[in-house]
Length: 76
Image (cartoon, rainbow, N blue to C red; front, side, top):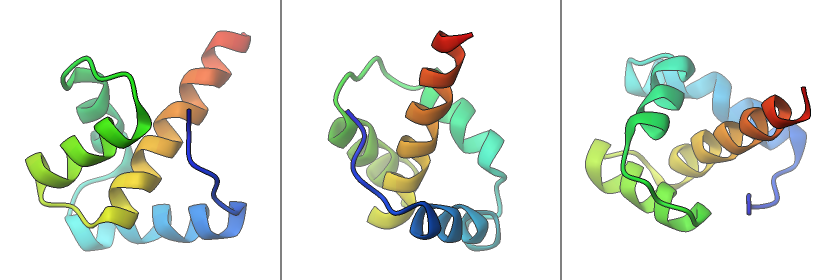
């Protein structure tokens, strides 16, 4: 399950990720999708942090956004 983020904090983190990492959010979401089959939020965030040398906040924001978009796809 996704961690709790305020909408404002989440959007601010997402806006900074391309500048800080040099990769777009869509690239990071694809990395999570194509990465190992991890089920828990913290496992995904930890994998991103260690595999791609991301900060904890950025990794959590990416996984949170991935979970939000995945849930939205299921609703369609």
